[in-house]
Amino acid sequence: MTTISRRMLLAGAALSIALPARAQSWPQRPVMIVVPQPAGNSPDILCRVIAEKLSRYTGLSVAQVDRLREEFAVYLIRTGRICVAGLNNGNVERTAEAMAAVLAA
Image (cartoon, rainbow, N blue to C red; front, side, top):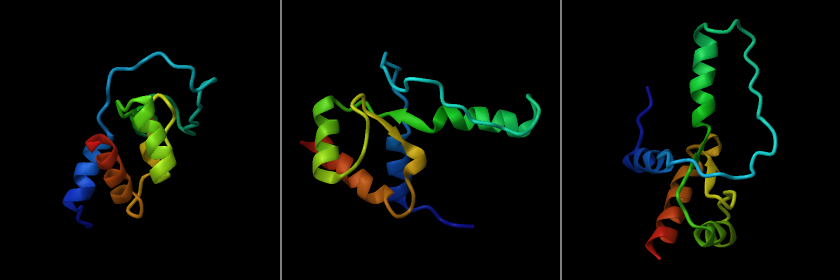
């Protein structure tokens, strides 16, 4: 069993906070996740839960998003939505530090 560092846990918690949804134009079309199982069984339910959590709103302003993209090379769309599925042990700490720097300014 692996252990999770305090920084990773705090970064994950900070990045996974879901703020109320705002109207936006992205994505332009639905994203489809194909589950090769009948509807209603365990894999189907699990994929439905995971699909909702693959990306989250950060609540950052457009200026903060631009700063993250330009200064820290952390990609978010302009509405502040980030794909948490792209975070891993190699980049979560750097991403959390970049977000902390932007929020502290």
